Length: 107
Image (tube, rainbow, N blue to C red; front, side, top):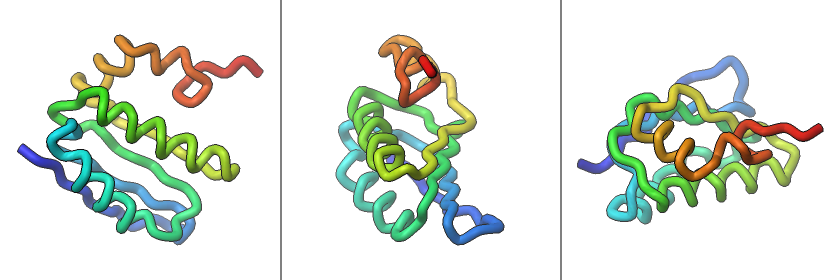
């Protein structure tokens, strides 16, 4: 099916909000990574809305981890909103919600 990224307008140039739809799987990951990197450019903070993602696999999970680490290690904000059933199921199964990157906060 492929994917679609739509950059939403925000009140600050430091924040990029991307509305993601379609698939984030091994079949699309090269193009997805290239497209997302070209859209986030010099944005300080990133918000991904994943409510329209239809198919999601471990490759999609890896790109989310990579993006999260990149932003958080620089002291920037990385937020995922609107989980689709496919993304939520994957994240639950893989323990994302027990991770400091995606929900659990030991501090």
